[in-house]
Amino acid sequence: MSKKENAFSLKFDTEWTYAEAPESTSHIAIEKKYDLFIDGKFVKPKSGKYFETINPATEKPLAKVAEANQKDVDAAVNAARKAFPKWSGLPAKERGKYIFRIARLIQEKAREFAVIETMDGGKPIKEARDIDIPLAAAHFFYYAGWADKLQYAFPNAKAEPLGVAGQIIPWNFPLLMAAWKIAPALACGNTVVLKPAETTPLTALKLAELIQESGLPNGVVNIVTGDGKTGALIVEHPEIDKIAFTGSTEVGKIIQRAIAGTNKKATLELGGKAANIIFEDAPIDQAVEGVINGIFFNQGHVCCAGSRLFVQESIQKEVERKLVDRLETLIVGDPLDKNTDVGAINSKQQLETINGYLKIGESEGLRSHQAKNKLPDSGYFCRPTLFFDVAQSSRLAKEEIFGPVLAIQTFRTVDEVIEKANNTPYGLSAGVWTDKGSKAFNLSSQLKAGVIWANTFNKFDPTSPFGGYKESGFGREGGLHGLAAYLKIKA
Ligand code: ADP
Image 1 (tube, rainbow, N blue to C red):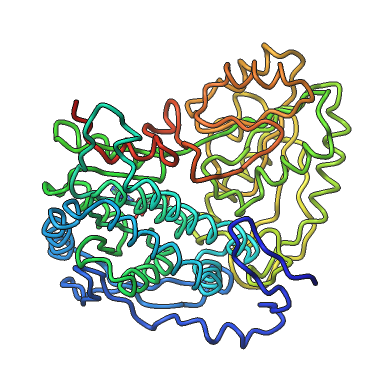
Image 2 (cartoon, rainbow, N blue to C red; image 1 turned 30 degrees about the horizontal axis):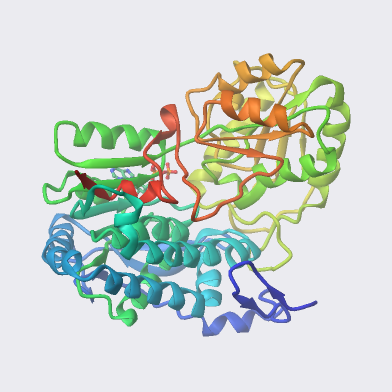
């Protein structure tokens, strides 16, 4: 196996295999118990309560994690409030230096982060190693660069930070979502109270250790753990100026109701049901690969997953055959094995949700194909599944499944597919596969979604704004647009 260098210059020694040498994960420091990170220190929760985070691939506990109550959230918000004048008053280039330092520390600890991310969340190690962790570092690098250039980003105006940002993130890309939230907030001079998801808190707590190591002034970033109740305490806290949330549309709506009538700003990145569209003139093999990546990447736990496939009728048989063949080559199993393509479903609850949708497909009598992989005896696993000829009215085509399940539909004309693709309450992303540039441009202007990929899918870059139309939320993260969400612009 040759040595590999990825786009962000992180060097990975691929001779070192996780699965063949289980003892080599023994140097990965997961503590038995994690406290809350408040005002630069790890402190015991005033609630006195801890909950367990488990490895979904083994169902075994990994660590106990503090459950923050009202008093704990108060302490975190107070620390962030106290740190705000000092942090926002620092020369911008000094703020940038701290953010650069965090980026570099993430790179240094990349391997450790990747293993913890995989163990806590279930994603394949090759994805954690090659995508999540390098991209998280890249976000810190990118926004570190903006810290002293805000006057160029917003010419003829003064850009002022909002204050204390309450940030609530989901379990599908734990460290990456923490980076999406923390990096732009700090670059703009805000302070932060972040809550990771209850099933995947460990990389955010590892990040807290590294933030301590970076010397970031106390209270600038506070990390509190807990479930939705802790999240709600952050949302409702009167001393929070902005809520940045990524998660389900259902909770997004609860948050909108909770902050209505307050001065809190919000950005919400919610669910999706992306259309991935293949035209007859597309390079078919490349498209099939993109469709597989679009839905099976991270077990389909991706808000912008290409979960609805639209195939032009003339190529239906060919595409279906190639998808079935490719499905059989996917390796489902131990997330720590570097050859694994599809890892564990994040939680028992999520597996039950996905199985519920598989039953719906069965009860509708849909033609389907499920990978024949033998699944591990323990852990939460789901075979990648294709449903063919799915009706627009089927729940499989309408609802976000958040699992490795693809609903396939066909179309004849461009107008028909645009109408079908837009016939959804969501609007986060879409993909178009065609050889014709004009078709790609036409579709990208007519599809109602925040991100349109042409002849690729699930490509992420810190310079690119990400966010939804309709019930997929509002506000943008990433790129220059991601800064605006953390600033007051004064003319
Ligand atoms: P999912 O349904 O995919 O688990 P959620 O939207 O429930 O996604 O969770 C995303 C994040 O929102 C998690 O960190 C979770 O703890 C948090 N959360 C859940 N309910 C609430 C709530 N009512 N207010 C604030 N945060 C919440």
